[in-house]
Structures are given as structure tokens and as C-alpha cells.
Image (cartoon, rainbow, N blue to C red; front, side):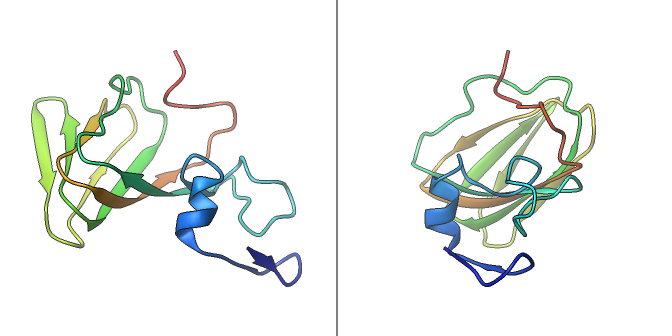
Length: 125
């Protein structure tokens, strides 16, 4: 939306996220953009009811935090299903933990992953 200089970016999560598959910050932004980071990735995920991950993520290389902003969102982990149903509910999983998800209602979730791994996309393969 707006960059005053090389160190400040002011934006809106909805439109900015829509431009980059939901991602607001990470290694995939241009070097020099304040949103560029090799340490962390942040995603503003907007999911219609019934939206589901196409396949489980296997061999995850990062740690992740997923926070429910609105809606009802289910995260599937090995041997466990976690339902996020109140604003602020969250789940954290570590490296190597397979996972998937399903939006039971229209949902907005904030995902933070670290580190930001160049060349790695969970939806590849």
C-alpha cells in the first residue's frame, strides 16, 4: 500500500495478502522491502466455508503458530484434531509435524512460520 522509505511499510492485510497468496512477510518479498525476512513468515489467511488443504503437509521444515481471528477453523495433526472456535484460539506445532486444515465456517487466520525457508512451499509436490 504505502512505503515511506526503505524501513517503513503501511498496509492493509486483506488487499496485501490477496496479492501474494495470503503472505504479508517473508523471504519471498523483494530484498529492501521492509516485509522481506529470512527469519519469519506471516500470512493473513481468508478461507470460505468448506475450504480445505488439498493434501497434508509432510516433513514440515518450520515451526508454526496459527491464530484464529474469526470463524471456526480445524487444524489436523497426527493423532489429533484441534478446533479453533473463539477469537484468539491458537495452536503451535514444531518442525517435522505433519498437518492439514479445514475451514468449518468462513474463517480468517493469522499464521506465523519460522524460519522463512527460500525455495520451500508446502503445496509443492
